[in-house]
Image (cartoon, rainbow, N blue to C red; front, side, top):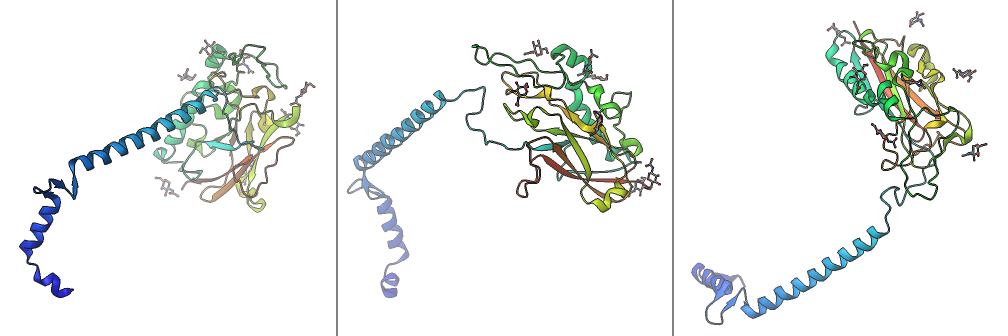
Length: 290
Ligand SMILES: *[C@@H]1O[C@H](CO)[C@@H](O)[C@H](O)[C@H]1NC(C)=O
Ligand SMILES: *[C@@H]1O[C@H](CO)[C@@H](O)[C@H](O)[C@H]1NC(C)=O
Ligand SMILES: *[C@@H]1O[C@H](CO)[C@@H](O)[C@H](O)[C@H]1NC(C)=O
Ligand SMILES: *[C@@H]1O[C@H](CO)[C@@H](O)[C@H](O)[C@H]1NC(C)=O
Ligand SMILES: *[C@@H]1O[C@H](CO)[C@@H](O)[C@H](O)[C@H]1NC(C)=O
Ligand SMILES: *[C@@H]1O[C@H](CO)[C@@H](O)[C@H](O)[C@H]1NC(C)=O
Ligand SMILES: *[C@@H]1O[C@H](CO)[C@@H](O)[C@H](O)[C@H]1NC(C)=O
């Protein structure tokens, strides 16, 4: 075989290839005549056209059965997730008190997050709801009737509202605030009619002394039932998610603190080993100073 290859000169190989590419004698391109290529093209055109049509048809049938107001399939979340603001990569709030450029980003993020909570904005958009019970708004024969949202005044967050001029949420004097929010779940009634609240603590008990006392706003970290249920962003356009602020007035500087916040509501489990965000959130806090 090796000898066969050697016999053919380089020129012959090129000529063979050229003939394969385009053979003027049989008028074949890559070994096929024009009509043969045409038939192949036609076959694939029809074949893919059919596939595309089938796809479009299935998609259309699917979309006919989807309601834009409510997700068709929701995992039946037993427990909603919690999240913090400022939300940093790795849930890590680290700053140096005397270097404002290390914490201005947090202040900016909190200002932006809390803008829709301004008392004036809330007064203009949302209703004053009776406290202590669910704000249920049945459809009453008009499907997807717009729902009123309840006021959550920014001033409820006390020193963590960032309202005083140059409000820095305590970052400038080493008493930072972190906001905790409960993720929205449509048509969810947490707490079984009993009051719910957020509790925060050092993740390990032995670190509690270094972390010092915590202050929660609103008091006790309570979340009123009037902010539930949530009906979805199409019908509940002005919905204002309740938040709880936790302030660390006397956390020891220059050490890592691991803080965990949990949602405390009747009927909710927050100890799921597999889901670290089920009804709780853990974050790292480090306050650097000289
Ligand atoms: C919210 O209130 C603060 C202070 O009262 C003000 O500086 C800010 O412009 C307000 N934001 C909106 C969106 O009204
Ligand atoms: C929220 O603020 C508005 C306007 O300042 C006030 O009328 C209302 O009573 C406040 N509501 C609560 C629950 O604090
Ligand atoms: C939402 O807020 C706007 C004003 O910002 C108001 O005109 C509208 O009526 C509100 N929608 C509902 C459903 O309350
Ligand atoms: C809450 O209590 C009210 C009045 O007792 C009752 O009508 C309602 O069904 C209860 N809701 C839930 C989710 O248990
Ligand atoms: C906070 O909770 C304690 C017990 O859990 C209760 O006695 C107290 O009245 C609550 N305070 C507020 C302002 O809700
Ligand atoms: C703050 O912490 C220091 C030491 O960590 C302690 O001596 C002091 O009593 C604490 N102050 C308050 C108000 O908790
Ligand atoms: C914090 O900033 C001050 C002033 O720039 C600096 O002297 C100090 O070393 C910093 N501390 C830490 C732990 O980075």
